[in-house]
Amino acid sequence: MGVVNVTPDSFSDGGRWFTPDAAVAHGLSLLADGADLLDVGGESTRPGAARVPVGEELDRVLPVVRALVAHGAVVSVDTTRAEVAAAAVAAGAVVVNDVSGGLAEPEIHEVVARTGVVYVAMHWRGHADVMDSLAVYDDVVVDVRRELAARVDALRAAGVADHQVVLDPGLGFAKPGAANWPLLARLPELVADGFPVLVGASRKRFLGHLLAGPDGTPVPPERRDGATAAVSALAAAAGAWCVRVHEVRGTADAVRVAARWTAEAPSGKDDR
Image 1 (tube, rainbow, N blue to C red):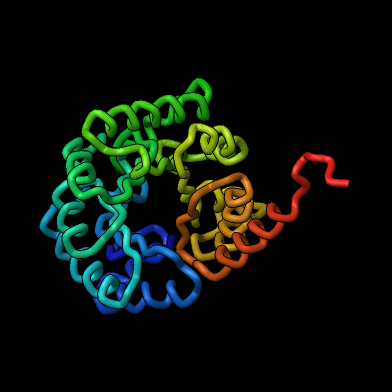
Image 2 (cartoon, rainbow, N blue to C red):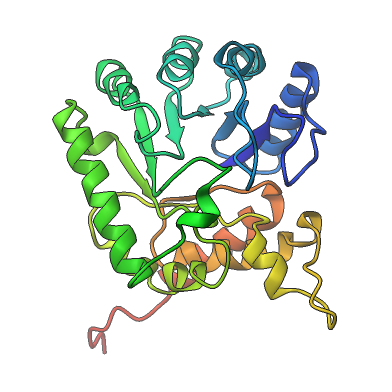
């Protein structure tokens, strides 16, 4: 999943793709680099980001969704709003990627049930301006799985079928630091819950801190792509359905390696 941020304040690219033409060109470049799916978002979810009016989000997202669909791309819309999700699906998006899992606007579940699109429910505890204050866990993996299970219950109650649902552990969301690593190391536990799993580690803060120099200064987002590709390969080997990344080519190569590696792994049976 290649990221197409139609925002002026993304943490990862600083608004380089903010105009529709630039966003579409970037999306096509990601496809050429090996993306299977393009995730178009019009509202930054970086830590501390303020919300944008719904009309502005629609104006940012819809022209890009329409243009990319016209070019044959498989498109996801990255939004927490039911109105934006419905409009984007009408414009051709086939996936709704909701970082709130429906907690921001429960009505989004009704849109998903009515349209039949794939829905990514991410683990989330609050909007970007408050999420770091909500990072309190007993066991982060157990807590995230329990809270995602509650999202699945809400989706089923709204009429969403299980085959539409993808789960995302929400790396970096109410998880500013070390809490992300257990979620990655124990990813097979989330995969074992029976739903496809999306992993979105790309360029996030915990990678910047991991790669920090001797003075402790985190490396900037654009220098985190190598670490992102490593996470992508390990996530693929652990059974992830998809990885969401800003730089596609390195991750696509890494995922191919992981796929071949796991295909050649011993089955555990005695084949002699």
